[in-house]
Length: 120
Image: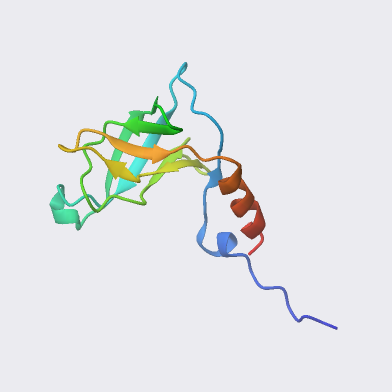
């Protein structure tokens, strides 16, 4: 049967980043742009950005020194923030005081989910 016209892909309509999984290099450092709406800056009303080097840590996590407080969770960590860019992490937790922000390391489960939905 004819499924009708092909649906446009979401990424073709609104844009998107690539995905990079695996370990974070320590030398040379991986510089990322971290985006979020932290409550401790402009009352969380304006998107903030921080450019910092990822510091690999224990338990398959990494940290940056962005000083983002609550409200920034889920914000992307983008490597090569130019026309394409690659998502390498998301803010998942921070420290008190808000000196550090942490992201889990993306592994095969994240890549599997990405590939499964890549054509949606």
